Image 1 (cartoon, one colour):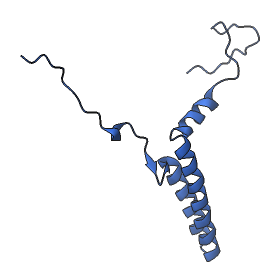
Image 2: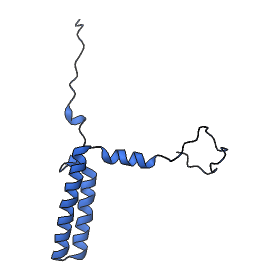
Image 3: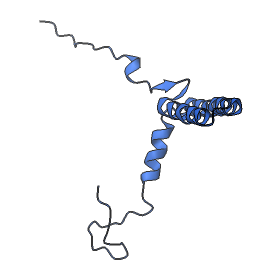
Image 4: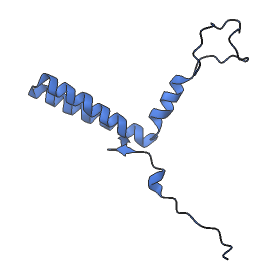
Amino acid sequence: MNDQPVLTPMRASLNRPQLLMGADRELVLLTGLFCSLLAVSVMSMAAFLIAGLSFSSVVVILARIGKADPLMRKIYVRHVRYRGFYPAKSGREITGIPTKMSWR
């Protein structure tokens, strides 16, 4: 019997965030959807030019954010979900807290 531990290779692709054009994939796709909706709804050359310029400028901004921290969007969403005040006691009958609290 072999007393050596079995080594399992960890692939870097399993740990990397999903980026598209250097930015968060979902934000780039959402930006592309909105810009294409703008261009197709107006159907003029000016609208296509504005949509193209706005898409490229937003992607540049998102790529700079993605370079700073690829998980910035998830961190910001978690930050927004935090409440301003967490009471020291739990329960519905805490003084100063409304009885209709959203329980998750």
